[in-house]
Length: 516
Image (tube, rainbow, N blue to C red; front, side, top):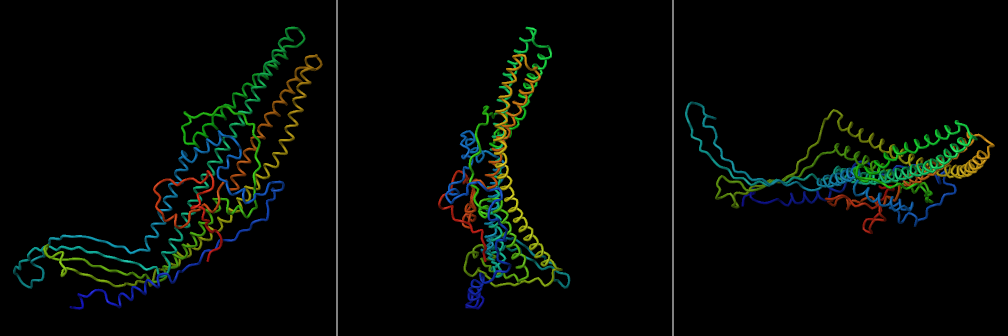
């Protein structure tokens, strides 16, 4: 047998085995270590608040249930199902998962199979030294080639690329939960603002009824000659002004109701909520310690994962300094006769490595490496700023709840005093001791104090929602998808884990700590 007819030699097989052994032997670029951040031992505004125990965080998820409002719980359940902005974020997460599979595809060889039937005739005049004519008979070539190529990951370029895409996909998963929590919190805020408006309307309607009786009283006294026409005019003015204020609240209520409709994915024209004056009080919310916030906030997890992705891109850029090794093999069947096309003598093949190295690029690779390092520095700064902003959010709302609770207590006392003053002044007016202007003054103060008390309660409920959001809602870093989950193909929208703790097979914690 001729040398050309023999298959791959022992040397070629040994080379291939050596390549396989070296593929995982080197990976350029820095190994990722989670950037350090400064975390205080406790919250400045946390005095007097319940410290979260381990079991407090075990069954979080449907955080809105802490308010004990079935209507709110029903609305929150619709956010996951119908909110279109959330659907956009879920689709972006699926895109990120597909990019992981795309990056991993570079681990494997690329094989191309083709088939061709070519009918050709060469020129009869090419190569003739003098006049003449050499007949060129047409011919038909039948080919069935198979080409395989593979780039061994000697320097870790592909592994760094996969590492980056996996971290980016995890960041996308955290983004999805950040957006989910944002819409849930926005819905709760709108809901309590709507109930606050209903409570204000309730106070105004009660005052309208009381002012209507006062107007009747002044008219009767005017008819009896013991009151002036000015008293009647003042009573009418007060009644109409309060009626106008009650009607004006309808504008804000309609806007809040429309906002809720959009959040639950419904058209405002087909959505309505019955009046339900706010009567609840803010629940007790375990706040935990600042260090736990790094694991409880999805936006912090997203920023940290983007830092990891940027770190891996440094390795991708540095790998460009090293040679590119490609192993190629091709073979197939080729013949000029259809009857001999699929016979053993028609076979052909070739196999061998190739190495290429850039010897001059005008500083391109250095510029790309510098860009990667700068992008990493920016992502680290963003991560640290996100952590600081998270601490601020918790402190802001702890302070708001503490201060508003004190204000509510004083305001309730003011309401009671104003109600007593109104009753005394009304009796004095009936006895002819004071003018009706005194009655109007005390009635206005009482109504203003009642409305203010309702507004303070609404602000306390909003601050409670914002505190829960600042603490991460029901999320935990253990819910980030791990590598095996990212590689799996997902053809539908990912299930929400907000209704409670994730299934056991999904609770494998993703290590956000240092890695080397």
